[in-house]
Length: 287
Image (cartoon, rainbow, N blue to C red; front, side, top):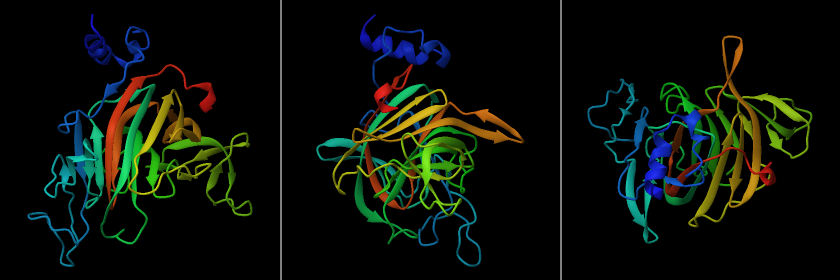
């Protein structure tokens, strides 16, 4: 069996069986083929009123009343381009939504590169550039704010790369201290060795800034095993999250697998060299 056949065989196995398939366990599998968006689908929510989408219903005030929807992209928000001599996925950011893998993943190491473009769009035309990699994504495409699936977000935002955001009330725990010790509602800041803060559903601030200047490529690594994940920005661990879960009625349900989403959120951004490999344990030096 050659390497390519081994990789394809590994991908064809159920997720639970992959850990037993050792022949190609450390092989990287590209999620972007450099040519098109095969293996991905798109979802776009209700556009800003400034965006022209022929045929999409508006109300009397001019606001859109329906989303663009699944695999409909009349404004070419998602495209494949050549930049810096290599293919990349361009997300224009003009309409909020996501580029989503068709497959689900569990127990994996995801690596990709991103850099910011120049274009920004209403309502964030004056705000810091924003996107995100959302993992363990499940449920309807519009469950979070009408644009994204329920998921854990590895924040990609100017000055904030590596933060955690919970979309649609997912829950995580982390070693952290409150940014304002006198305000229990202030954002926790990841602090290795601190007493864990349990039950965070919104934001946890990264431990340090390690993003490169706008226009330069950044390498982001996401490690996920069981209910634990690590956010790594340009080789430095920014955060470790544990206890990934969500609540149904009064019961916590572990959330350890799902699809991967890259957000369109008002800013032009480029992604390339997206690849994933199976993982049985997060390297101890990251934890």
